[in-house]
Image (cartoon, rainbow, N blue to C red; front, side, top):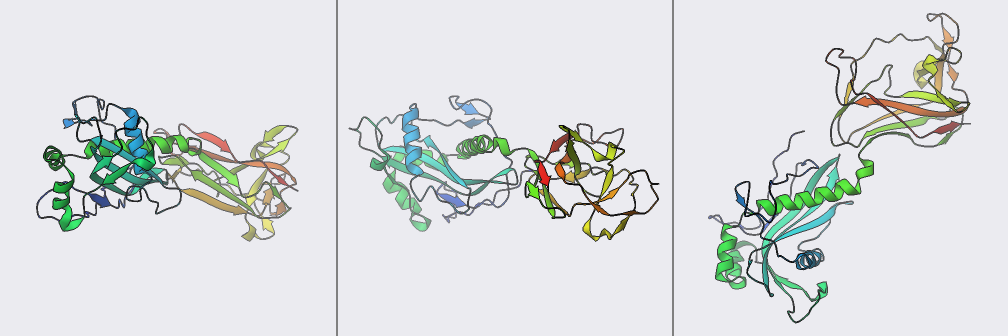
Length: 349
């Protein structure tokens, strides 16, 4: 899966390059695993770029981030299930007391089809103030000043920041703080949705009346594409429970059957299927099907003899879905690392 370009909408319009406040919308997805710079934030240079300065005080850094996430300029929500994150860098590494001058990089992230996507974000230098006489942090006592947008940007930079900080701002490369932000968001979603990053198959209910339509859905919640096999005309198989054991009807002489759909009519014949190539199942997508419990029984009649469509017998059932990530080089019809998963059990009464 390729990483596509991010579209940035700048709030400041200048004929010369001044690194200022950038608010942007990223219209294309990024992979869940954000880029990780080599080295550590304590090193002087990372991949040839100056590393994040940091604060030397994790409590201070966390308190400022918590404060920013309460401010509408740095935390907002445009979609349900999105989350806001902020990363900051200390522009005045020798400064111990407030005010502190920082670069703030905040963004709204969401998981889209198994991929992390930044919906919008802001990257801006700001001045943070807090009463130095206090020995604890109360986010309600913080305040900040950010540069104005548009033509007032340069003048506001000059009025907010001392000369040495203005020089740092003009030369500042926000690449690393942006990478750290994406890494932070990625870690959150990987932990939050760890149990959901799997392939599943399920039914819409757990109990059905005889002849009631059953809805089946398979979902690829992984962050990668896979392949699935379908030996007949549907992506799922079925098993029934008998005496505590799950039985595949295709291998049971007395009760073997094939699945029949509602439009098959009253008569059916056993179909002989050719082997089919595995089908691609993209990350974040789902497969769906509906089945009205019709079957074509094998029994002992000739394969070519006409049969009467029947309802599947009452009992406990589950669906099977077979998938994998690689197709065999020796046999293009086979998945080399095939894995079977099962739906919830359901009862036909």
